[in-house]
Image (cartoon, rainbow, N blue to C red; front, side):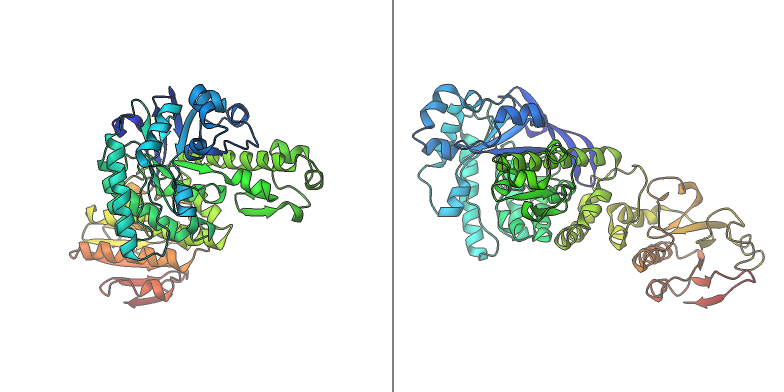
Length: 513
């Protein structure tokens, strides 16, 4: 096993998402992440692996070594020819160990050491030990017991002579955050290479995306930011942006083929049934060259749907990479979240971990777009609130929604000479709050905020006013606002003079809160 820091290099960050480079020594390739690993069934290949590389630019795929090991038809062939020649794939190949079958059927007929040795002999580039995938909702006693078994198997895998083959270290623990965090810390410490978060498929199948986020967040706290993270079984493009923002790098998808077999058509908003479509909402080659009716009547229906599903899935990975590079990943996550209520639950859960996201989120990006009340909880807002204590205001400060240039809101709105009566005039930018003039053009305070913003933006701004006032008891403060809601004004400390703008004749309303 190699030093993870040498194998995985991060090039760009946004929230906890990143574009990285994963070196796979045995294959002699470097995989750019986030990356999709199409699942290849050794018995049935709807789309040949060579085509996955040449037509879809797949750099890595995953197949099941347990299926190969147990197949009389395939076992000797793959041992003799090697996995790359057997599949005819030029990129990196990861292999699963039979843990899925163990979860489905309760037992498998191979030991951890035997399947690791088989993976080494057939030429796997990234092998997987036999972990115990503990499903959601089980007792804590069972989750702890099975986690202990998984951890012992990871320690055995770390002692296994893998040569140049990378070995993954699955992170289990069911839906207990402390167990997931403990599992992540143990996995990161045993000396293995890639870190799958396992047993989340039942959550994803039930669209429990908020719980998926909590599981990943806990695992990431244990693993630390340097570890390449694989979200096992995450194959639907609708949730990739959310998972990447939480810090996942690798995704394996059997959905493209399984859904096609059932006549289902993937989109980034969810799944459609081919039988219900009159028009294709996609511009991939399959959708441009065929109508839904033509594919319904085609003998190649399954293959054509598989191709579309792969096109939309790989396109979403590219879209995510572009969003990370442009500093717009969270805007993309929010756009995807508006496509399904369960995804909105996932986005809200993501923002509950804003402190964790903020640790790797760049201090400077493009333009911050305030899109909804959820935007008030983003890590950039949290960072500004936390850094208010660093500011050194003078004896008197006017906080105003009128901006910095005297007269841009109308001279005299808060009384003649009011601007001159304060040592400094700072702007209020919901949801960030107080912004001194010297920071006006810096990210994220140059944010694009709608004129008709919501109460949560004002409440967040008022919270930041309270923090700044508390940190500077020697300063006198005046807040000049335009019809802030009562819920926001209630958060403003009582010693702040509060006036309401809106009348060219002077103060429309003045209260000491």
